[in-house]
Each structure stands twice: as structure tokens, then as C-alpha cells.
Length: 549
Image 1: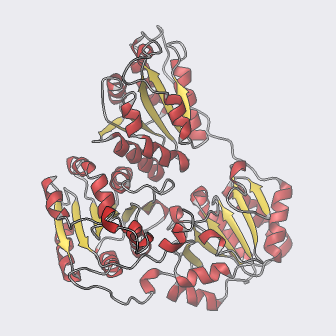
Image 2: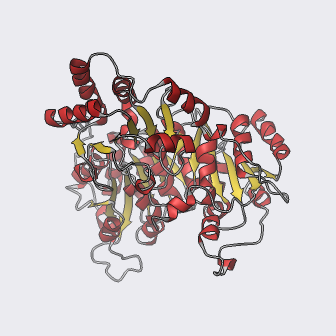
Image 3: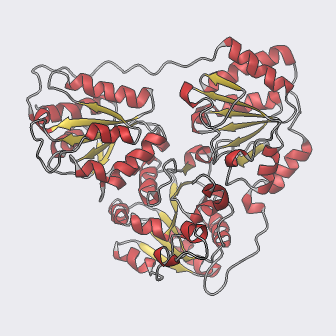
């Protein structure tokens, strides 16, 4: 057994179940070692696709995933996906082959450690045969316990070296990260602010996804409305006083209620410019609190009145105990019957009246999305690419819960949608995978359509096709030349069929009748919907988004 085999065996013994990658000479042995030891390997068509598939799989499964790439160019191809994962704190290990220390003139030689750090990933290395197991375990623990993306470099000469004789199997379980408990002082101050508030709103982010019950119990006692950031969409589904998404995707009613709050508490939510519309959703009179397990996150995006370093569930639970001890019965505060009615009737975008802008053989993207929301099964897992279109699937296609929405947008890169959808689909095979993407992003990542076909994924790909990079079209001024961002209309349905997918072209709602036919069939290949959409003149959230550019 050599070190490459040892690293693969160790990761399998640590509990890694899925790996994604593109195999070259440098990562061939370690990839096959993973497979021999029971790790499911998904062969992607591009390393960038592999990285985001692994990212999405981890987000939707909660597991540490692995990406396997060749040295040099294999790693550079994957960097956008690695950057997205690192910014999102996805627990992921990138096994990157690396040229030997003596091969300084190799065409593949780059500073892989510096490259990893430059996008926010943790750079690690397998240093020697004797340290291989310890180096691999350290990378795994960092990924899992600290929720970090780790690039574990595997020098070719070390990979090929014999493993130390008698290297034992990993039998002891890696201890879980210790719960970060808030201080008593912080809890008391949090309770004081809740008691003083008349219109509190709790906003949960990805860090609050495991604390639904505790946050809702505290919200009921505190008389607070609840909302989520985009990445935690669906967390409070079924809750009477849930506002939905806070930020650029908020409905007008949701935005109004949040902006009137006199206390906003972010649970595992950084309250960044997207979630708070560059601060527009926070009134000048509002007090602001953040609860997070990362000290560096507290106050990172805006001034706050209180930062609570602690686990979201533990913090909510302890604050609830103190409130009940001192406050007695639950307060109504912002949970009035009037607000309950407003939320029920107006907080969902599906309930906001649509003035249909369909014309000239192009369908209104809202009409399209609302129709598909009614056709597609409710048990779905929705992934979103980036672009002018992205608000429509994010707001008009419902999801069953927080694990039904995969939003790889920390890096704001277009072209990650198809990769995201494949990873999410593999993590949740019990749900229908659905992707919302633009024509620009779809064509950027279209090589992975072959992967979806090869895997027989029942994936519905909704292409909001405006034959342009729509965000740029609406961002550039009239004086600028739009030839750089507009293109001839392409028959994406025909291209998709060339990959082996089913495909339809949609210009009117009646064209969507074919979707039901696909749903009634075997669903053994993706369905690509080439929807020719009408121009919205710039999506409602786009003006807010470009303020941060």
C-alpha cells in the first residue's frame, strides 16, 4: 500500500461517502483508493463542476464531501467552485495532486498553498508517509468541526511512497465539535432587549438551520415575527408568523414589516447587504443583535448593539428560559391578528398580482414560474444559478423546507447552477430536483448536462432564456454598447436533446402541458425547458444588488 491508497482509505474510514472529480495522472490512484474503500465517486466533465457538485451535496446532506483534482490546471479549473464553498463555510476537502518539491520546472507547478488561501480555503498538505494519516485526519476535522473548505495537497512523490508498515485502521470516532454556549451575561442582555422591544423580528441564516424549534419557541414567547436569509429559505414553512425571505427577494409586505421592527436578531445570519437591502430594512430606531458561533462574524457587515457568541439553538433555549422565568406568559407584541392576516394574504410573491408582460412569443417569467409551481411536485429540491432572472424561481417556486433550497451564491458567480442541481439531486434522491438558470449560466456549465444524463437524474432545468447576460443588459447605461452582452437566440432545447435530455421550448403557458407528460413518464433523463422570457426591464432586486458593486 502506498500513501495515495492510505489517504483514500483514511477518508473512507472517517465517514466520507461521496467524492466528485475529474481524474488525471496525478489523482488517479487516490481516486481509485476512495472507490475501493466504498466511497461513491461521481465523474464530472469539468473540475469546476465537480467542486460545486460536492459543495451542494454537502449543504443538502450535512456531510463532509471530497473533490479530487489533478495538480496545477486541475486545481485552477476548480477554483471558482472552491471559492464559493469557502465563502459559504462548506465542509469540503479538495484532494489536489501536487508536483513533487524537486519538480520546480514542471509545467504543472504552481503555488497551490497560496492559491487555496487566496479564495479563503484552508491549505493543508500530506507531508510524508509517516504523517499521512495525521495530516488527513487534521484536514477532515478542520472541514467538519470548523465548517471549512480544505485543500489537501498530495505531492506526487509522497503519494507514490510506501505507506508505513502496520498502519492501523481508523477505528476511534472523531469527536464532534463542542457546543459553543453563550455567556450568562450575553443571554441576560439579549433578554433585556427582547423585553424592551415592541416589534421584534428574528432572521435566521444558514447557521440557524438546526435551531428551528428553539428559535420559533423563543419567537412565540417574545412576540416576534420570523424570517430567513435566502440560503435558509423554507426554514419556517408552516409558521403562521413567518415572513419568508428577508432581503432583495422580500415581497413588499415582508419588507414593510421588517423595516418597521424595533429589534432585529440575526440567528446564524450575517445581516449582510443582501439580507438587509444595504441596511434599508433596518430602521434608524431598531436595535440589532447577532448570534453566531464565529466571533469574527459578529458585527462584520454592520454595527450591532449586541453580539452573542454562541450556538443558535442553545442561545434561543437559554433566552427562552430566562424570559419565562421573568416574563410569565408570552407577549403578543408584533404577533397581532392584523399582521397574521397581512402575512397570510400578502407575504408570498405568488399572492402579489401580476401584470402579464408576455408579448411577441416571449412569456412573462412570473407567469412561467407560477405555472410551474403548480405543475411540479411539492416535494422538490430547488437550485438557483445567478443572473437577472434568479429572483423568479427563488420567490415564485415554493420549497418544502430549508433542505429544499440550494443557493450557491456567496461568490455571485453565474454558471454554477447545473453543477449545484446535480450535487443537490444526489444528496436528496427522494425529491424532484429543479434548477432555475439563465441561458448564459446554462451555456457556461452545459458540459455537465451530459453528467446529469449519464446519472439518469430526473432533473427539471428551467432556462429563463432572454438571449443575453440579462443583469448586464439592465445594468449598463443606454450609451454603452450592448453587443457584448446580447446574443442571437439559440435553440437550447435542440442542444439539450443532443446531450440525451428531454427538452421543450416554451413561449406561452400552454406549451407547459408537455411538462406533465414528462412527469407521468419514467423520469430517467433530465427535462430542459427552454423558456423564451419577456424582458422585465431589470428585476426588482437588481437595483439593490448593484448598489454593492
